[in-house]
Amino acid sequence: MSSRVIRSTRASRIGMAVGAALILVLLTVPWWGDRASMRLLVEIFYILALAQLWNLLAGYGGLVSVGQQAFVGLGGYLLFILVIFLDIGAIWTVPMAGAIGALISLPIAFIVFRLRGHYFAIGTWVVAEVFLLGFAQVKGLGGGSGMSLPIAAIKSIAASRADRDATIYWLALALAVAVIVGIYLLLRSRYGLALTAIRDSEEASRSLGVDNFRAKLLVYILAAFGTSAIGALIYITKIRITPSAAFDINWTVTIIFIVVIGGIGSIEGPIVGTLVFFLLREPLAPYGTWYLILLGLTAVVVMLKAPKGLWGLFSQRFDIALFPVQRRLVRAADDKPG
Amino acid sequence: MIEWINSIVQGVLTGGLYALFAAGLAIIFGVMRLVNIAHGDLIVLAAFVAMVVIETAGVDPFVSMIAVLPFMFFFGYVLQRGVLNYTLGDDLLPPLLVTFGISIVIQNLLLEIFSADSQRLNAGAIETASIKLAEGIEIGTLPLIVFVVAVALIAALQIGFSRTRLGRAFRATSDDPSTARLMGIRQRHVFGLAMGVSMVLVAIAGIFIGIRTNFDPALGPSRLLFAFEAVIIGGLGSMWGTLAGGVILGVAQNIGAKIDPGWQILAGHIAFLVILVLRPNGLFPRTRDE
Image 1 (cartoon, rainbow over the protein chains, first blue to last red):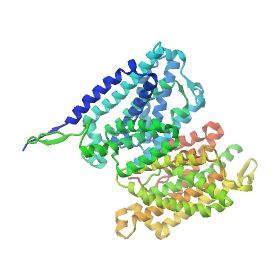
Image 2 (cartoon, chains in turn brown, blue):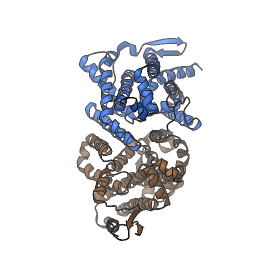
Image 3 (cartoon, rainbow over the protein chains, first blue to last red):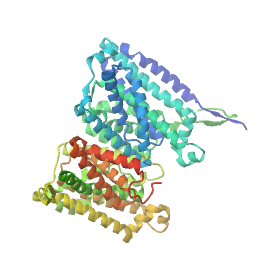
């Protein structure tokens, strides 16, 4: 009996088609959408991208960082530094912030990778606090009270407000799509196989010849790259930056809840989590603290009762994967991919 | 010169409080390899519980310990047996993310109930009393009491671990959980007791914070970081190391504050990172985290 390995399934092909159609529709929003919904969509895009990157770190790399706000804030400050002191166009700072963030993540990895498993999480948090307190000491960047983006820099994005909004919107959409496609391609590559092996068992993957340290370092640097680039984008939309807001632990709190509730260790999970987060946030926002309490309790219950999150429950029940990164073995005789 | 010595002396005393934070964290990590991200928030919770006890019963903060300590022990035991025991296993994610969720829940519940206002536990004249050691060096009676209590508690824990039945159960479970179970140790119960003991330390630390400084619902995370830094600086598995870690952190912070008030916390973090680079296993490691 012969058998072969397949990667895509009918569900994933339908999913791809729907996804592509959705992206096409989203591309046209600036021509017909109002300002408020565009702003909301921009926020959804960057939170989704941050969640995907954290999921890559924690869900695949096993690196539970509670300090990703270090890179959000770093990206934000790089925007201001590059724009104000080097006169670089605001949009161009996004990739540059990513590259510089990745570079800075190397020495940080050198320090925090010394902490095993559990303690790694808190170590990354200490690093983020060092960034917060450090930037608050820099007088040239406004110290603790922060600074605003000069009007000229905002105008340099595009002359009219509508054009600026559209440019920022497309940039945010492009970043979110790039992050998801990038992670998808990474996970389907050889490195992805190594990462999935590490996710399932560190010992087993090591015994099969996977260089766990190298794979983890790669993931850490990639996450730093993406998170810093998104940080720059976030502060293009916010215009004003302060150390306490830029390096706020709540960036990480939000994305952790999204990933855990949606489903850690899958690409679909953070998408589901982001949708749930924003759907619940709109009606529950007036209740502020109670909303956070509800999210916290939900995350605890999900982790205890359904560790693979909402998407895990769904995909287990129906055996559906929209982003199939695994390899399926099917017998040639009854070749019926789900 | 004398000012610097004074900074160091004050730092040592603050370090005693940090060692108290850290000891609770060190016990549960030692016994069940659990890193409790809600540790700092539980310290703040204990301070608020004490505040309620003090206000309703009209007692002194020190007297309130009679109620707060058993309450927090019970709370810890139930938390461990009801929730945290189910997160323990080979996977690192569940304990981290569950305690992370609990941390956010506690913070926001406290915020909702007690508002964001700063609170303080009033202990009367002892708060301002001080002893003059030399010209320019005065130590507060209260910081001294805190330091002495911390040292005494760490000594008691060290003796408890090596001499008592429960201490043996803790160490046996820490070294080899499955063999310990074969020897008749009820693991879930032992874990519950370890968390209970950790929460007693948390309660004492919380009440001391309340008397020494102001506290508010947002204070937890920074206390978690101090506790964590003290544990790592000291080296895993050593209670005296934890005390040394707390003292080093306290001194670093006080020297930082002396140079520039904005550098207080930053100096502590930097001292921690430097030690992490130079001595990844801490200064006095006993066990390895494998």
